[in-house]
Amino acid sequence: MAEIDLNADLGENSPDRVVGDDASLLAIVTSANVSCGYHAGSPEGIRATLGAAVANGVAIGAHPAYRDYDGFGRRAMDLPSAALQAEVEYQLGALAGLASAVGGRVTYVKPHGALYTTIARDRRQAKAVVAAIKAVNPNLTMLGLAGGVALDVAREAGLAVAAEA
Image: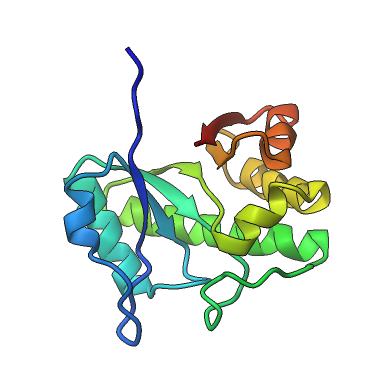
């Protein structure tokens, strides 16, 4: 029987910008793409979302983005590969630390917004993101656009992949 993973982008609230009802969504989703802080959220709010995900048995995914809080991570950026890799590593490490602090663990990565759409077609940036994932935790699954370049790059690098419909 086919299974459907229902996921949502969460952990994006902060005191100055509330964008969703994480508690309600965590009661129905099976996985949560949790902000790593660059496009939205605050450390305290992200930690609370992670704790609620653990309490609800929801799988935790890292949702890294370009450093674009004002644009909510929706503005494309052309960062040098080394800079992009370091920024994604930083975000993955921060989220993994917060997840561990509340008894959870990150199991996959789904880039956010403009980063997600850029790496679906830009091999150079996809390679930087995949290199970051491998450097931080090569056991993480890469979740991306079906048919996108990023999933090809991740497969070639030996990462597990999951395609989003």
